Length: 383
Image 1 (tube, rainbow, N blue to C red):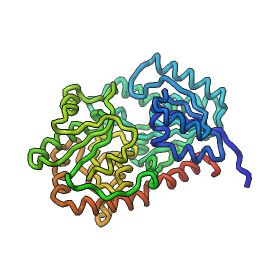
Image 2 (tube, one colour):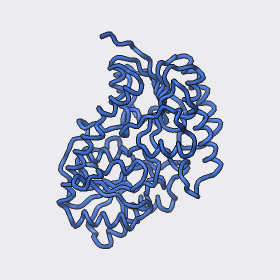
Image 3 (spheres, one colour):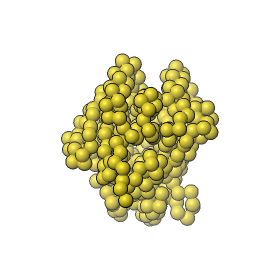
Image 4 (tube, rainbow, N blue to C red):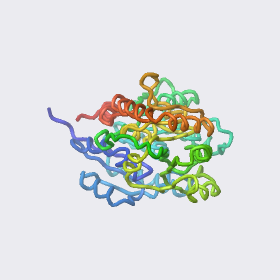
């Protein structure tokens, strides 16, 4: 069978995500097609070299996906428009907010054959949180509705059903839209190998950017509560602190980096050694997750999970009681988080048992090969 070689243009707001989240997908695409990417500056030489090895054509932007900057965004829009006109892609695949909003609109304008934006989580602009900036919320929702206006060439991809329902409720989407749901970004089960959890000492690990919506404060508060009763328990935190509009307070950041309660490891290039040394993965996120990648990585390596009963996060806990791989807790509830931590401290065998069931759940639902097969179908790609 002869496969028609297509040009696929991927746009994102983080160069780290290209291989961490989309590496296997890009490899699969590049086998029979040509991939182009438009990404913020690639800081890691390993990422740059791997993309080059695969034959991916890279272009770099100055986009900051976390901050509001009209001038910066206008420059990004102009650069993106010029690239679409130059590349003339058959398939346009943007993911995360700014690439989706600006890119989908421009791809329609340039009459790209298939536009497949992926919304990897809606974030605080699509909640009813009273602390959100109302003007920013209105503008973001308006721009998303405009860019996702129904079109026969537009296939919209979500990572959970709750996000698509939310946009329907907000009248951003309707029955005319072609909507697809995949199980997150998937996880490479050959890369994240199973290892027996460490239970001496009991070690809780959270992997997240240091922003409020991820539940950093709840993790810190729960750690304080547990250490008062179980002083040998270890708490670790991996992730960058940046100037995101939702960044944690400087006061909380100073408490974290002091090392008195939490061992803060900053940003790391490979989380596998830290997951291997962990007993349980924790993510008390409020909202905005597609399906949290850090939890999938933990599950793949056989770690029990404590996460929030919130959009995206709840997808990672098997709803069948006999196959439970962890616990869901209410959002913004440090006490509930501490209670579940205490459960694992007192029931160490369940750290092993829940971890084994998590690995099986990852195989069944989140294997990256299954997710990528679905994405190929949505993008009408041959493999």
